[in-house]
Every structure is written in structure tokens, then in C-alpha cells.
Image 1 (cartoon, helix red, strand yellow):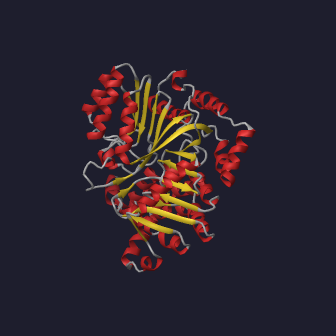
Image 2 (cartoon, helix red, strand yellow):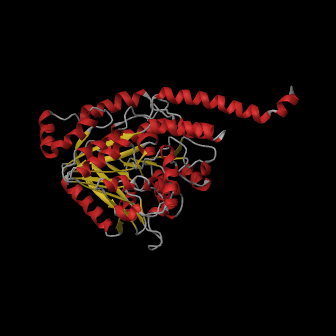
Image 3 (cartoon, one colour):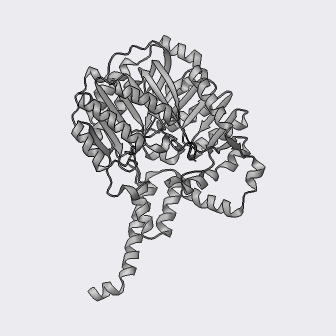
Length: 484
């Protein structure tokens, strides 16, 4: 028997591989997921023995419906419901908002029924351009914290800027301020020295879904890609800027990083707090006592409507993708999109094509040089069909553009963590601020137009003349796009 196994070991392993692959294919087919994604997984399982099973194990399993990321009921049922009741708009208030937004009221109504996405009216919003400006505001707010500091980041590194942040929160913790930090275990890199320092200072910190070898698992599914800060329940931050020297442009233009964040003071901080607490409940397994100090009364009287939209494996709907889809479809004049990774689904592609062919000024700004070979070529594979539909496409040349923003008709804008790709729409935990305000929209539009001065515009004729080898690379990368 042993001799037989030795003589036929590869045949047995290959047979076992395809038996497991067949079982995986049946599971995929019964899930009724996107056909393109289904075909991609089936091809990988059939054409790449052993490797295909690993790819499916790490990237192919869909947890949204199985609810393994459910938070504890006390947060979901009590706190979230209370906030939904608190921000329930009276009919006259909804009518006022309807008059301002016109067709874009559909955006509010789309997310309004979700208890996690109430519309808040009274906020002060500050757009923060690039890391230097963000950290100037953030560090000052952290130093002035009186009761608690909550931080949730995809990337925190204890380099220069990260070390400064850690120093501040350690000092605040030592002074009696409650400091809680959640960081993604794949994206972040915090040394044992810094962890020891935080622990001794009284900072509570937990990694989100720890993995055994973070350096080799950069694309593992279900990562927490959010960037949230809540200070005293009164000030909130959300956007694209992580905590790392890469985001601050320390190198005097050698490696310029263009990004956007937003600082919010007012009612919208409460939904941000809820999302932090639900993550904290998941990573810490603690019974944090919910007090009024976490949700203080709002004192802001400036009327700027904001919704906080979150999506991930713990939500029943792809809230952010649906909001972007509706925003494009309800545009009257223009849609200006900035994203570092553009690997869209069919819904977004169709929405952009239809809007542009209908006479809407649709513009897309992406990096010319990407930090991912596969993502770059996958993105490029979508550009010709958009150019054919009169979408204007620009590639940023000054450095790497990492901002994730959309502005529509001087009325609606969004700033957040979600890219326009499969991973942000379906796999990772993301969060965006949806802002209904003409002043904020015009400011973000001006930032976009300023960025175009540092960009090249693609033309259909020139783009079609790229080499056949380049097109082959794009086709190869696009095949993997549902997995990126």
C-alpha cells in the first residue's frame, strides 16, 4: 500500500485537487455571484492546480451572508436604533432638503432606511488637502482631547509621523484620557517597542483580524480599510490618509503624495462613533460601557447635511457602491471622480457611459504611475470603452494620487476610503462621508480642477495606438480584476 502511494503520489494529489476544485465550483455556482467573478474563479481552479485552491481559499469565500462579522446585539439594536430615532427627519425638513437636492434626494432616501446611515443636518466640514494639513489639524485636536480618543486605521506605521502620533496618544492616556486604537494587521507595521510604550501608557490597542505573516498577505480578503478618528465624540476625521510618512511628502517633492481627508464637527460624528464602536467590539471582545460622554449633545448650528455610509462584509447592501451609482445617474451637469484604483463593476461602467453619452461632463482622474502593476494594467483595460463614450480621462503626473473623492453638480460630494474597485465595493470594510452642501462641493471641484493642471488628458486616438503587448498585459490583469 505504501509503495503504491509512493508510486502514484502525484496522481493522487492531482485527483484530490480536482475533487476539491469540483466541490468549490459547485459552491461558487450556488452562490449566484457576478458571472465574471464566477468564471474567473472557475478558470483559476481548473487551470492552476493547487494554486487555484489557495487563491479560492484566501480570496473567494463570501462571508457577507454568513454574518461572521456581526457585531454584538447591544450595539446594533440599542445604540444604532437610538441614533436613527434621534436623526429621523421631520417631513418639513425632508421637504427642505428635497428642494435643495432635487433628484439627488434619491441618495438620501437610498441610505435613509439603513439604521447605520442617518442623515445629519448640523455639521461643520473642513476639507483637508494632503497629509501635512491633515496632521496639523489632527495633532492639535488630539492634544486638546479631554475624555476619549478613538482611532481606527488601515495603515499605522511607527515612522516619523506615526511616532509623533503615538507620542501624543501615550501622553493623553497617561493624563487620564481613554485612548483606543484599532489597526489592520495586514496594512499596519507597529514595532514591539512602540506596542510596549503604548501598553505602559495605558493605550488600549487591538489588531483587526490578525494574520500569521502580514508581509506576505497584503491582498487577503476582509481587511479593515477604514480611517476613522473620533475625539470626545465631538470631532471626527475620515478620508484617504493613513498614518505613515508616505502620506506627508517629507521628501520635498521627490515622492509627492496627493490625498484628501475631511474633518467633521457636529452630528455626523455620532455615526462615525457608532462604526468605531462596532469595530472595537469585534476586535477587543470587550464590554465597553456606552455612556453619554461617547455621544455628547451637539452644539453646532451650521447647517451642512452629512451621511456616513459604511460598507463591508457586515452590511447587507453595498451601500457606498450604490450611493456612487445613484450619484452618477442623477447628475445634471457634471461628475468629477478621483480614485487611485479604478477596477469598476458593470453597474459603474454603464452609469459612467450613459451619463457621458447623455451630455454630462464626466471626468475621471487616476494616477499615471501606480503602486501596483496588476491594478494599473487592469485599470487601463477599462479606459478605451469609457473614452469611446466621451468620458474625459486624466492621469496625474506630479506624483501618486490617492484621494478618493467624487463631486456632482456643485451639490453633492463624497470623501472617504472606498476606491472604485471590486475590493472596496464587495470585500473590504470601507467608510465615506456623503456631503450635501454647495460650498463644500465647489471647494472640492476646485481641488479637482487644480489637480488637472498636473495631469495629462488621454485621447481615444492616442490610446488606441498603444502596443499590442500592452493590450495583452491589460487583458491578463483584467482577468484577475475580480480578485484584486
